[in-house]
Amino acid sequence: EELLEKGYRGEFYQAFYLQQQASVRIASSPGRVSDYLTAPETWEAYNQKYLIDLGQCLAVKNSKPCPIQLKMLGINYEINSFQTSFKTDQGSAAYWVSKLTLAKVQISIGAEPGGSRLAIKYLMAPPLSMSEEGTNFLINLLQVPDYLDNLLREVKNGVEGKAAG
Image 1 (spheres, rainbow, N blue to C red):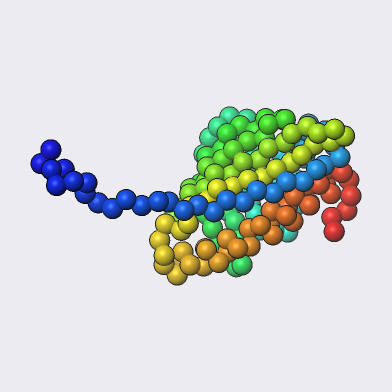
Image 2: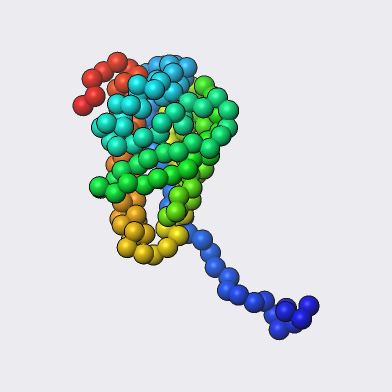
């Protein structure tokens, strides 16, 4: 009572988040899309091409922490992913924690007539500090929509058996 007798202490604030969603229709069953996404060779190829090392994080059968490495515009980011198990026809969700940000990443696979819809959605907090590293991270965030579009295109081409291009 003594602390609050003169009203609230501290400052109220509203948190800002960056949200992005992208999806692609794939002419294949949700099961085939799921198998492609959880295959280790898929992510080994994407690691070489896009410098995204998800390790085995997407294919976990049980929820558990998993380390991720991302490289964007020459900067390496180490992220701890707390992943839910991946389920065919549902996908998964993960919470990413790094020294710069917190994020929720969702991958969903839904059945559609003649195929599937693969969607990736993320919600990310701005950098936790506005250091040079935080500023570079904000600049790199501008590249994420292009990364998502390219990644979805690659998955579509890979599942449908077309050469990436």
